[in-house]
Length: 252
Image (cartoon, rainbow, N blue to C red; front, side, top):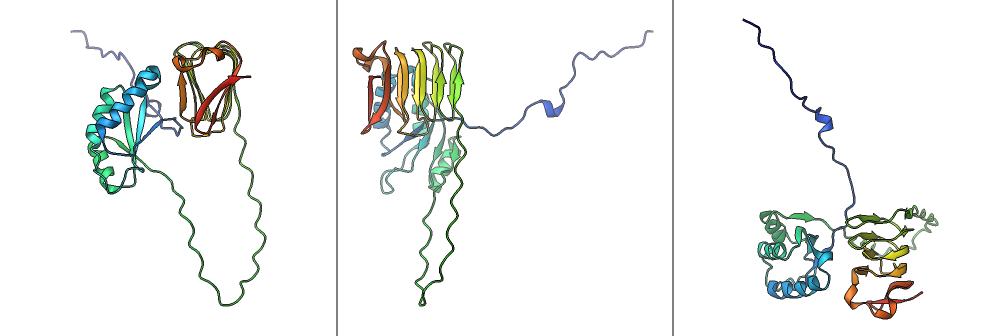
């Protein structure tokens, strides 16, 4: 009888090579609610989705509850999350300090995101004697400059590029591509995709491009889709900026 031989068909990967957990920054839009009327919320949301369907398709969203009236009707988080899913959005969590909503979020399998708030320092009690002269405060160090990201290759359809500072693209941006920046966006070519500047809320950000044919342009959450762009600014050098909460598109 021949001895049986064992054959190893594969090696299990070492535990340290299975995955790693790393810190990172992901831009997720927030749906800030001012009422708990879910039909009214969804009706308005559907209007926005019709204006820019590609912008909202499968987009993750955080439900911001801080602006809800404390004396109003409570919001049904599970019902809202289901309605968002039915309209193509992906709710990932909530921002709220209310313990009741935090519990409801966990029951609806939503994450709870904290929001850092800086409370004012308490005023010191008035001293009976003149206070001693305090030393001159040292000047605060300047924050480190955020580097500008430069892209030299064409941005193809389906690509998404994000910059924590300014973003400069020295090539065309194709339809179906998306470029985003916390600061300004410069496109030295045709802009046919989507460009979102000031994605962290910087209303002073601007978009500059040499040939505007964009599907969508946005500054600090204010946006225009292709259908709402005036024909007079198409296919020419323009800048896009905010003025009194209105998105302005004008010739360079």
